[in-house]
Image 1: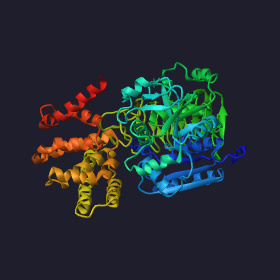
Image 2: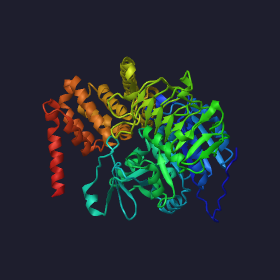
Image 3: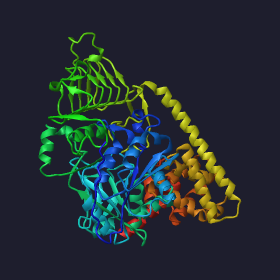
Image 4: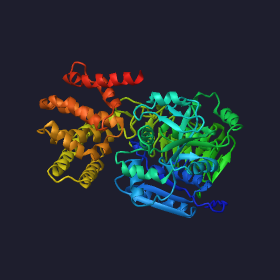
Length: 638
């Protein structure tokens, strides 16, 4: 195995060194069907090479020589060979194995809590993030901006020819001014006054590459906000502070003019000609895999050698390269012996075939990768004179897969060790996991593509196992009930104790521990924490509630900074009123009190009120507050 060692000339006096923080796991449950229980996403293979090998390869092209790799403790062994190899490449390579982390935010809090981030760093929150440039210009621009301490974050974006989530930037300074919603990436909220004051550029043609250049303070932001789960939570928080605090920090974009991986290649008549044309204008590629469609199309881009050199980078396995980007493992040979014969006449462009594969001579392959040990077509034939007639195009086939005769597979993802019989047609955009189930979202949203309404930790189910899904739903309800009871118990314990700030901080730690133990979402935490607060003060007067809420303000500011969490708090009041009629006389006062305390914002109240049934009692109870807020807005406009 040949190691590629790159030497960089550093200018005298240069002291700023970036650390690469790479998170090896994916917290998107859509990928569960294709990953074994103890296998990290970083160990998953694209074109028969582990994802992290591509990632570390492009990092090695940059000036970065200090790497922190974060991995869940129970998946650490799946990365042993990768870690062993790359430790010899970088000057510093630290492996952080942590238990019970279920989000990017929790991983960064764990890293920062151990004091590992002491300088500016590059965050790669998705292990399947690839780049074919050395980022020299991008890093230099970031360092120049960092001369002003307010400039704490630079996001790398690239052009796209499809509609992407909306963002607003200053076209001169490239400052990020507004960011799309977390629940609807095609919705923007923007302050009208700021919108009219400056030149703005509203863009929907830019694609996030998944690469972020961060100051060390970004890690501290995660540590200070336990409800932050994703990188985008930090972005929204920093943007919110610009208009509300004098101690604001700024975010910039760096626009890449290389071709983005996520182009809709299927709509191009000839992808080969398409990329040949683009190669005259672009010299590098940046992309991040966020769904199954990305993995399939990534196979083609890697085979087209946008990530050069491929594939003889970090593997002892040799590949023979043939025209039209056809790569065949060294253990096979085209037109070789009968046991491993591959007929190049039936192999189309952009195909990668792994070791020990047995493929019938007339199997048609196009723009696909075939995993090690796959048997396609002739392994089921009783006589070699019988034709296979199997056709596989634009698909990713896992290891040890068995595929029969006259089978059609198009634009799909087949996991390891899956068996598919004769005369089967796999429709486009199917995912067949190791248990052989075709999957889709429980709420009918698309499983194949990243959906704008789908949460990153959304769940899925198999058509063949509806009862299991229903049982799981019951279990989830029980888990939420236990979480709610634990939060109430934690609040009850400190209710009669002499107040102190440390007491509230300890309460937050207890709630977060329960959240981790039961894997509760951020929205559910916001809802049930507020509901628990109301329940333990069931017999309290409004004066008592006001005093307690003032003392517990640290708790509320911790969980209710985002507007979406504030809406959850209002929904909790609505639920509490339905079971506690005595709260009717206190509801409007309570809403107004939390508004005056800057816990619940006007936007949250108005958004929540729009969803309230106009025939319900709560609608009339809160109507005076809503009318007052709207009148104040009209006066400001005048």
